[in-house]
Length: 305
Length: 320
Image (cartoon, rainbow over all chains, first blue to last red; front, side, top):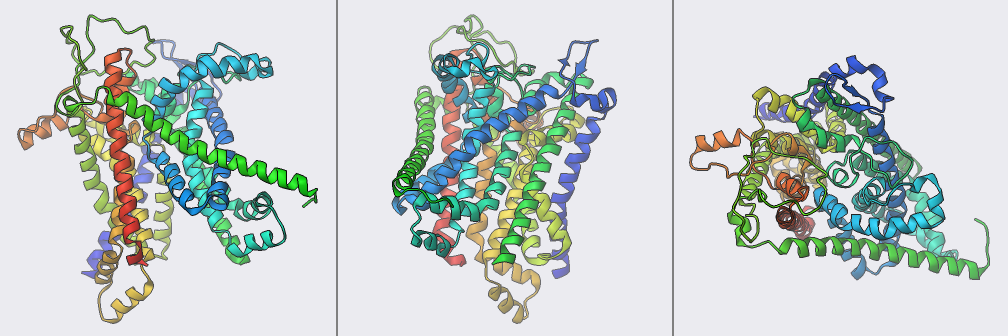
């Protein structure tokens, strides 16, 4: 029985490995047509033209949209997450920090389509009628980042929605990192007369630096591949612009939008799967980086203790 | 660290404290705001008929309410049925609810046994082997694969060869997403069981497998929590179902097993795709139905998540 169990369990474990490999192989195989047609130029080509006879596909605008929307999300979410985690660990009394922590965790459980609907039906009118006109009138309106009509849809909306989505992830991990900072170290710093901010800045943040970077990488991975929420609010146009008010697209949103109509056009389908393959490689890279970082920093921390 | 005047230090400290407090309050307010919006807009058309009726397509003779159609996600199976002008909500999502439950059940049946066994392997049999390290790494990487990629993968390996979108494909897609979560949480929960228990069991002459069963009994609540959280996570997923289960405006045929197989082998109704379709539509009655669906899904997912947490909190002391 023991031998049989071992075989069964090993098979189950291998299934995970095989599945990961199968995803890579099949995505690669189906993007071959596009790879052969466009070559490496696919990465720098900003056209996306599905008109028959003039078909021409490039990944540039999708990659640009993915990277920029993720950047906006991280710029908004990371500082906020650190502030919230500091509040939960250092400042809030227990009766407050437990329900607040739960609320932030529940925010992570809300399905992504809900965030998309929230962005489209609630955030869009607010942005279009109040925030974006105000931004354009302020001194920021002169910069290239806030040009164009205040539609409410586009890069800014997508970035905000993505930030709301990754916020609970980064906050939860950062909070655990803060909690793992030895009490003794914090109390020693307080004993030296440090204020809460100084203890957080010079002890907690410095001690938990590595964990926070790991948390950010995990949040980054989530933002890169988020589909539904972004599809609702980014506007889905093939545009590359510095302006955050302009509509754009991401790899995931383009796939969600065009896959169904492309099933009858082999080249477009292959180009979309090619995009998907790029996204797969990108997010696996981020994951590998995150795993390596966490393993490395754990080893370092243990070695020092 | 540069020394500053006490006044500056105190002021800055207060400022940061206020900022932290504001951020935390803002985070909670956001959750409350989102829940209130879903409740307000969803409860308008949420009645008994939501659970007993299939969705009704938009009135053929009413123009869309000025809104621009940003998305065109029309169901190829959808027939153009003109409907008599009548007031009231545009049907319900009973068929989608049933379809979603069945797809999620299928995913659970596929992923849980495999995932739990893989977790057993990682924690008990091959804990320090290179294979376990590889599988653990693969599972962690799989967490990060965007769910839409899994949808495309299942389209390529199932939908295209079979020539049809199906509930089966949807179930497989969700199962692929569940598998690494179940495997890793099972491993983590088993690892919380002290090694003393394993040593004692093995010393009594039990085999490795008997030991594993005993240990897993001690970690039961934790494993169940992991499974529930995995179910909660995938039941809110839309992207992997877009190109696999697709959607259907009619009920699944549950009259017999073969009839069920027949209808589950074609485009299968599910809540997430119907909500996406409805809320992308320019017709107000469709959008209203979409919000009702969103309310039901959110309540369901949050309920399962909270249940899982309570279960775990209630039992943690038994494990330790």
